[in-house]
Image 1 (spheres, rainbow over the protein chains, first blue to last red):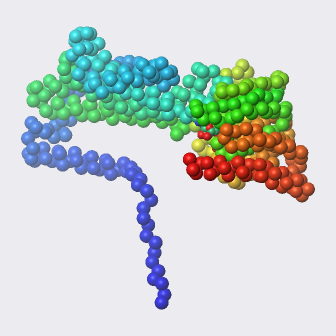
Image 2 (image 1 turned 120 degrees about the vertical axis):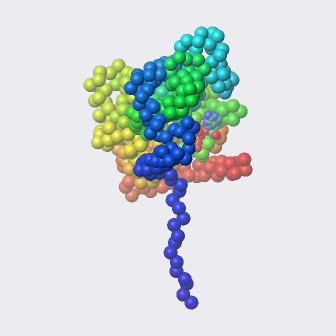
Image 3 (image 1 turned 180 degrees about the vertical axis):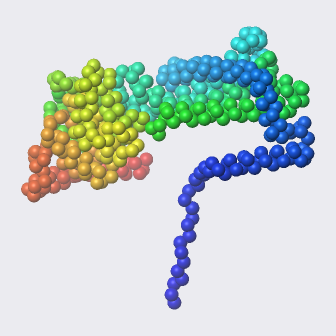
Length: 263
Length: 257
Ligand SMILES: Nc1ncnc2c1ncn2[C@@H]1O[C@H](COP(=O)(O)OP(=O)(O)OP(=O)(O)O)[C@@H](O)[C@H]1O
Ligand SMILES: [Mg+2]
């Protein structure tokens, strides 16, 4: 009797989620379309969920009047300054913790204790200390950025293969050269990945801080629109935040390409 | 320059790894170190190269390195230890940058080291673009660029496949035929030792002691003839006899904890 012959079945080549730009765009357009339709057909009340076009109109009006730019600039300045301060301080402590035993022994418990505190909970305290003005907001954002940066920096240093440091020592590279040429570049991937997190944290914190007490800023813009039940303006502000987040993410991707092109 | 180990002993915590090692590396020779896995070969090499402080004993250096030498004791690593973010030339340059060389002299040294390892066409490539054998050549080029007095090689070929290993063996052979750089070459592989070494230091299993120093009386580069092969085969048997028992008991020790 002849053996039955059958073709080998392909069993899979490993899970590999890819990316299709067009699918994303089409899906996005579809959602917007249905949303717009729901608004114009009166399926949902424009007060509770204004249509995309209405949001766009509201945003355009704010932009033309110049109002939007005042709020946007205020927020951007706070994010920029707060992020830079928090990042610089965080890198300083984090790298020190990666390199020195003393700094690590001191820093580790400190980070474990303070990292989990939602920094916005400290804003009232910072207002008492620094007043209601810019300083208390900057400190809140800076603190929010500081701790994740510390963690990213010292774990980045930890990921640098020890054999590279040994290699550098075996060629008698001075300490500073080992830090600059071996440790820092090796830690850069983790540090930049940390930026991705801290930039969105800064965005979240600036809005929260501005909602609590600010005349200008996207947070203030959104909360005042809410008080006036102007949901189109409110959502316009949210759209601005989303765009800011996207821009920041793109910026960091560009930074990664530049700094980590070797990967 | 001569490297002399005097009564070297080393413990990792409670684990004794090396015991009373006396070893004088002669100027211009290639000394192979063989011994069972875990007997402390890498530990000894680190001690000889100043990367590890021995628990007991000391390392002496006799004589001066030649004038153009920038790093007398220079390692070639098993895992290559290349900076992935630097190009081939950049990796070689790394070990020259902190020396007071004119930029022309530095460029000359990089170009020369790359030429001697057949890497000139790959100066701008990143390590990830190279095969394992090419990466180790970068490791060798980097070592040559500082004009070492003593090369310390810790199983430089063991991360490579058999064919690549053979090609690099030939490179080493011709390197040590052309110029007499002193070298200490740790290996698992008897035939590597027999191809390259002037003397073979055989170590016992852990704690490693120097069991025997075996001379290979044939000049390198004249070890392929029929007569030489006979002599080498005899040496091979003798060395294998020395390490066989050690390796076996090391393995059973591992199996039975
Ligand atoms: N940093 C360390 N801390 C503790 N123990 C270590 C350390 N390095 C090596 N050892 C142990 O010391 C012993 C000798 O290690 P070593 O790497 O010198 O051996 P080796 O002869 O090079 O081995 P192999 O042939 O596997 O490379 C091994 O048992 C190893 O587990
Ligand atoms: Mg070893």
